[in-house]
Amino acid sequence: MKSRKQQRPRHKGSGTVFKNPALEKLTRTHIAVPLVLYPLVSAGFIYYGVAELGFTASQMALLFFIGMVVYTLVEYLMHRYLYHIAPYTKALEKFSYKVHGVHHEYPKDKKRLAMPPILALVLVAFFFLLFGILMGDYVFGFLPGFVMGYTFYLGIHYSVHAFKVPDNFLRVLWHHHAIHHYRQPDRAFGISSPLWDYIFGTMPKLRKDNAGKGEYIDPA
Image (tube, rainbow, N blue to C red; front, side, top):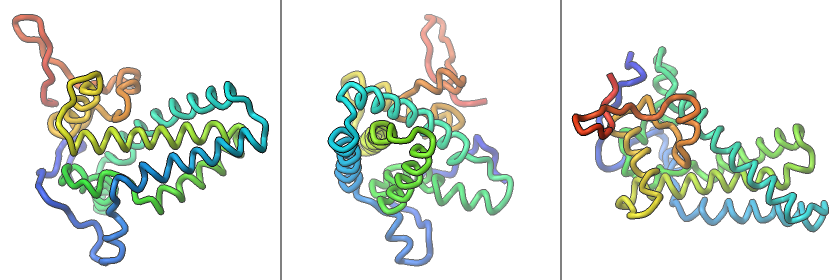
């Protein structure tokens, strides 16, 4: 079996997840679809929270911010422990490839840089029920932040793989994710933020040169 640190070779083009043509088509998503859909979903929740439940703008803003922060933690945990689950069995190896391995093998495949909207909306419904049970009506402020955290992640993730490194503060996120893909796949799991990599000790390893400057090294 492949170890957690080993990677499949990277290729151009697009891989195949399902042999069934209909299922295979559902795995491909144009990035514009979720980037338009999820803000509309979030706006609907916010409108209901303000217009029907009477939440103030400051309450919604606080809940929204908390939702975004919680999303970054969920993103990190899913990427580290679910998408990169160690393939101890053939079944796990197959699962890992379908949900994430194909992306590592074909990182420039632009139509596999976002979860299919149908599946994502099912997850939104699941989180709505879960968070609704845990926090009641506050879910109408929290969930939009959570969903927009995911939307921001999609924009960053797509941009990293589709565009050149920008000459601004976002270049940090470009480099961080590139290190995960091409040099240290067992580190740099945060995509929309490196916050949890700092907290959980999975920032990329550095090697000091004679001038005392650090550069990223390949994992041992």
